[in-house]
Length: 304
Image 1 (tube, helix red, strand yellow):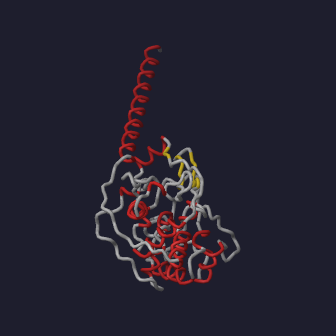
Image 2 (tube, helix red, strand yellow; image 1 turned 45 degrees about the horizontal axis):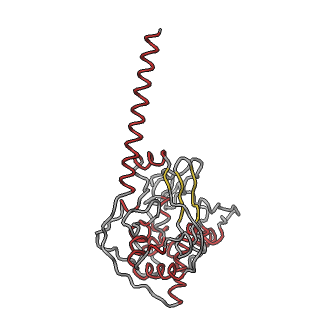
């Protein structure tokens, strides 16, 4: 009996040692990725100074979800705190106490961070969804930077985002989840050409890159990779017969994005579906988004 217990203890010890080695390897690997320095050329983007352009930049900042993360005063917020993942904190973008704007010595630093997800020190940003903003037109990006630079100082010390141990494991093993957007952005590729504004599917897609984070590249919804347990699945927004579509008409679609109310009067939680950001979209932008969704090919629910 003692011999059996001894072998069990040895086997358990070996297994624990292997787990410790695996976790340590993942930690070292994730540290290397988090501290990688990206050597990127400066990109010149015209930054306007007139009031209309700054107001337009605020409009983009609001409907693309930047304000939902960084706050109405750009002071920064805790976006998500989950022991299984870590702390997702949006930074204070102003020149106030705790703000990161003091580290941005040039317009090119802002372009690099928003378009490429890279800090002024060359390291990739954690959780900053730059892969959505990589597609911004020169005009839109310039207006957003102009708005950020116009913001008055806001004093708010905001801790940087951190990964938990399990978060590092997920980062290493779940390839579908993007923790460091700079890793997947084609930094040296020719710039994608943004479509002209209009009631077109192309412009609608341009306006909805953030939607693909939850609904998937094909917009068919399903379980969202690496999101906390209990987080609802994203709806299928394609033209598939199995989609759950709580609007059915353009009018109903606009109502949801303006108010969060379905045609049956159900209130959608903005923590899960950020209609509180999309409500800032103009009628023309919502029309283009509707045209894009109606042009999507049918795809079964959950195929991403």
